[in-house]
Image (spheres, helix red, strand yellow):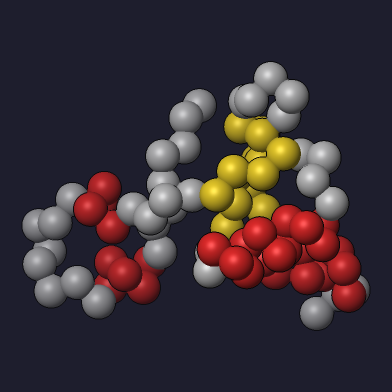
Length: 79
């Protein structure tokens, strides 16, 4: 599985051209290693102004996604 970008639904809803392909809304996605500490992962997302990151393993395969909300809950507790 290869992830090339992330689409924010709000970008799609604000578009006036209904015929625009969804690929046109894709934003570059951040890739983090699964062993990255939560605080460092949160900082990486904040610095890149992203809300989602793809998680990869030692074989460089995608194994999941994480949101900024997931990381905040891990660090400070349930929101």
